[in-house]
Image (cartoon, rainbow, N blue to C red; front, side):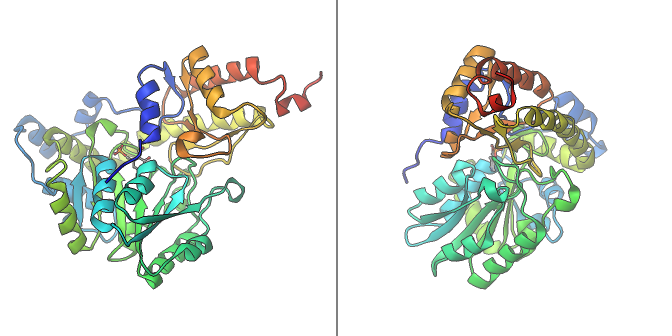
Length: 384
Ligand SMILES: Cc1ncc(COP(=O)(O)O)c(C=O)c1O
């Protein structure tokens, strides 16, 4: 197995803790520990106060697995396997299901490990493009054309990182039907699920679509608790779960004991947790709408439908890599060039899950006004 560098993580390794303001983070402002503990019910409080720091049950604490199962329609506690983040879940899943002679279909752009871990197993990977001109929506016919007799996985991400797109229900249903008809397993990375701006846009979970369907979830994004490093796979395929459990013996063995209790407390109060997180996103979206309206002709975006990130484009001649680097050096504000996602369209990722987004966006606005007005397409609208 030979993994290429994870471009996004290398980018964050350089800037995340050096930049003053992150305008590209995909997570939501982390929950303060004290506020989370204040949500604990009696059982949660007792678990926390009496916690012993030994190993935990390898599949995950039974109560936590039950709470996770509560996020789905047809999933029971024993259909859930807890991992250290969605990242470990992806790593285990691809390694268990793919190898030389296998084929996987993965959308592009995408969170890099969804494709790179698949490739590293020796499997062949076909990327299916999401295009800005289609509002970054999945084209199921393209997935159909990519299918091969040995396709074992179709991997999508709904809501999608980095574009914030969400397939419409009819498209998703066609994808589910295609997976069933072809025998390929549908894997849905759902780490931004529950952050759809219109709850009517929420898609069925992968694990609910069929017995072999897989959902990948995590506490990091919609639940705003990335520091817990609690993720999971939900599937009703118990043979797959057994193989994943055996793989996990070689990675983390079991999750962190305090993190499991904290995740349980959060999921038992999930409506309160999600409401706080959605409120941050909802307060930021109108600021972004106004920004992109004001900068039409210079920046362009397809308004996301869910999640905490979007993928706008810088128009004109300035390359996004140099723009992003100059922006962070000049203003301390970090955006993420699309090249991190192997995108060649001058896009960049913007994150709107942070309460200080107004300030970060203000700095981008000032910087753009200082450096881009001249020579940008926006100039065409201004008197010379
Ligand atoms: C689509 C997607 N999947 C998986 C992950 C991994 O989540 P975690 O870092 O919490 O393990 C991320 C993180 O950014 C993501 O955006």
